[in-house]
Structures are given as structure tokens and as C-alpha cells.
Image (cartoon, rainbow over all chains, first blue to last red; front, top):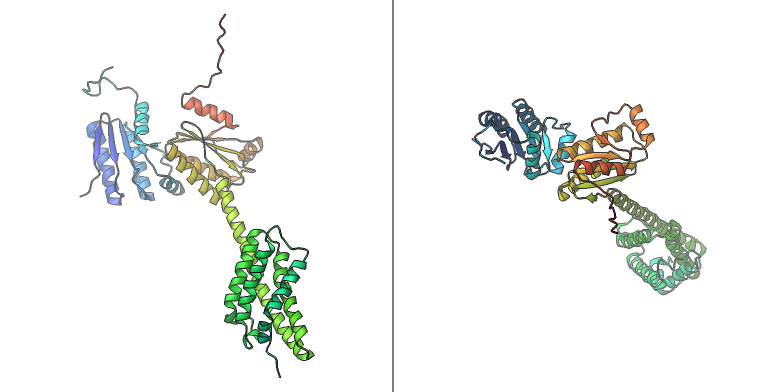
Length: 131
Length: 286
């Protein structure tokens, strides 16, 4: 059973897709990710698809779905590293990924998430980082 | 007895070449600026050589015979190169027609019997006519190649992506936007965004003569694709006429940042990146 690893990084979840997504893998990812958001209480999800070279309407919809699902669970989604060809394909398919934010690379995506979510709340976790 | 014209011509090769060269050099349209006389002579010699090697008593009457393929190949090469060098169709045409004159001149000198002279003249005329058809075909093809290459160049030149600041790229679009060009523009822009790691792209459309719903559709697509890449896209250079047509056509550009000039787009981009442009104040010490 293939799964795409979901890593927890502080308040965020990090997913890097390194293989070509096939339909089953994508639906699994959707389910796993929503589950992970719920169990970890993550405030942001970062999906890196820079290795993805082929995309179809199903993948586009799954990514959009993940964004919307995370949104109603109070987590922001950032998709990073969309290849030019993939971006053009998505637009031609009429998928603008309305529910998700996009960034050029992982670094920018992290920055964006931090801006969107704002400074850390004291009450959320037993995190020891203090200013 | 019927004289063999092919044999006759082969015997008179030197004179034929001389006649042809004289004819060509006598023409007022000779383009010495494009091709030197030596080069012209070399070209003509090669052609005459190959022609005389090919013709014989039987195939001279059939210009479409496959025997002439190598001759036609040389001819095609010559007219193709002439098209590229910028010869006019008239000059290229004269090249082959002056050969006919040279051939007929020889026949006239050598054949005394009027009936036979007429017959062989007709044969030669037909043969040269078929050559000239090929010449024109390839000449026009050469020209078309030139046009095609230029079209490609224009498409390439007209989509330069300029890096105006750290993290800001600008793309001035000049000329009409059609589907094929949008594709090129979009690809170039996205490619550059990745390469430079820019987060803002300015699409300047002051050079676009008219915006109709199709062009607007293309613009919207480009903006959406840039957003997917994680960059913000600003459209600048909206002229009053363009604003009028856009509103009259009922195109909704409200979710795209639009600015009247490139300068204001740049100012907006600076404010998005939290940059500030300040005038340097001179400190006067007294």
C-alpha cells in the first residue's frame, strides 16, 4: 500500500510529492492529510509538487479539495513549486485552485504560511519557543 | 538525316557557356552587389556541365524524365540561394531565360534545315521552360522559408521578459495577442519567474492595439497561471480606449490588479515588497 509521507514541522504539515501521482495515491493522500490535520491540530499545510510533471483534472481537483477541507478545519494550504507546464495545464483545464495559496518554493511557502497564521498562540501547544 | 541536338550541344559546350555568360552580363539587371561575376560563372558552368552530361537524343524530348533530376537539384539549389540573397524574381527568371537564348543561338548557327531547326528549337524551348517552372517553384519556396523564419524571430523578439528589480519581472507585450502568442508569452513569463525567483510580474499591454474578449481571456489565463506559480501579476498600460472596450464588452477584470502605467505598477510592486524609493536629500553642512 503506497502512501505519501506527511511530516509535521512545528505547527505545519509538510507533504512533498516525489512520485507521479496516480488516482489511488491522490485519494489516499487526501484522506490521510485531513486525518493528520485533525490529529495534530496543524494550522497550515504545505504541499510541494515541484517534482510533479504531469497533472490532470483529477489531480487538480484533489489539490483543490485538500485546500477546501483544510480550510474548514481552520488550516491554510499552500501549494509550492508548480512547474510552468503544470500551471499552464491547470489553467487550460479551468482549474484555478481558488481555495489554496501558492508560492514559488518551499521557503517562500513557509514564509507565507507564517504570515497567514500570525504569531504563535501561547495556548495551543506546549511549545517552548518564547521571544 | 536527323542531327542529334544533344551531341551538337555537347560539342559546343564552351561556346554555349560563353553565349550564356555574355547574355547574363549584358542584362541591365545584373546584380554585381549580390554576386560576383566569377561566382556567377562558376554557378553557370556547373549547371551547363550537369545539363550536357544528362541530355541525350532520347530524353531531350521529355523534360519530365527522371534523368533530369540531378540537373533540377542544382537548379533548385541555385534559385533557393538566390531567394535568400535577395534577388528579385525577374533577376532569377532572367538567369534561366538567358540560357534559352544561348541554346537557340547555337542551334541557329549550326542547323541549316528550317524544319529541323524549328523542331529542335521547340524541344529546347520546352526543356528550358520546364526548368524555369522548377526555378520559380523553388525560388518562391525559398522566399517562404525566409518569411517563416522571420515570423519565428518576431515571435521570439516580441516576448522579452525584463527583470526590473529583485523579485519583479516585467513583460511588455507589443502587437496583437492571439492564442499562439499567449502560449509563448505565458511559457516565457513562467519560465522567467522560476529562474529569477520573482514574486511579482508586470504585464504591460500599452503596445497591444486592441483588446477584445478573446485577448482579455488570454490575459486572464496568463494572470491565473502566474498566480498558480505563487507570484502576483499586475496588468499595466491600460489606455483609455482599452478601458472603454473592456467595460463595453462586459469583461470582468475586477479580481486582477490593473494600473494605468508601468510606473504606477512598479510603485505598487514596490509597496507590495515593502520597498521605498526616496529622493536623496543633500545634507548641507555649515
